[in-house]
Length: 284
Image 1 (tube, helix red, strand yellow):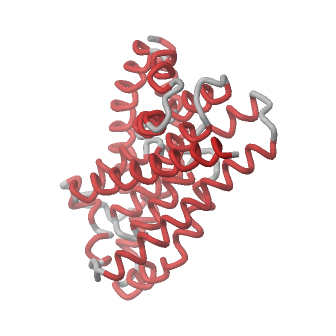
Image 2 (tube, helix red, strand yellow):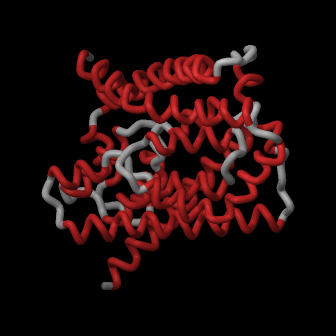
C-alpha cells in the first residue's frame, strides 16, 4: 500500500504544472479579454484537431488534463479534445524505450495514433458544424467560478492556484482508489481477460484503456510486449486511454450527458480501430 500511495502522489504531482498553467490561461481569458477576443479564440479552432493530435503524442497525460479544462470552457472544440485524447500515449513511450522496442515500430504506433486522432477530430468537428451546434464561448469560459460556487479573486494567479488545488485533490482521491483496485486485482488478471480472444480482445482492451489512470497504458503496453496481447488490442486500449483527462472532464464539464457522449465516442473509435488492425494483421 505504501507503493500505491507513492505512485498516486508522484503521478498526481506531475500534473500540477499542466493544471496550474491551464487554469492561469482560463483566468486570463475570463478577466483580461473581451467577448470578441474569446470568439476569435474559438473560431480559430478549425485547425485544432491537427495541432491537438501532435501535442497529445507527447508522453504525458498532462495534455489531456489541460485539454479537458479548455473544452469545459469551450475554448477548444470537441474534435480537438478527442484528437488529443486519441493521440495521448501516457506512459507507452517510456515503457517501449525501457524495453528496447524497435524505434521504427514505436514511430509507426505513435504515427497511427496521431493520424487516427486527426482524422476523428476533423470528422467530429465537421459533423458538429453541420448540425449547427454553437455555444456562447464568452459565457462558457467563465464556467470555472460558477462550477465551484466561488467568487473569483482579482488576482488571476491566486484564483488559478485555488482551482488547481481543488482539482488536484479530486485527482489524488480518485487515482488512489483506482491504484488500490489495480493493486489487488493485479495486472495478470487483466491480461487473462484479453488473452487470445479475437474481436472481444479489442472490446475488453478498450474498456481497460478508459480507466482514468496512467497505469492503464503501462498495463496494456507491457502485455503487448510480453506477447499476451495483439497489436489491435493494445492500440484499442491506448486510443481510448486519455489518462486523468477523463477525470478532469467529468469534474469540470457542466454537461454530464456531453461527457458520457465523449466517453462513448472514445470507446467506439478505440474498439473499431483495434478490430480493424487485428483483421489487417491476420491477412498479412
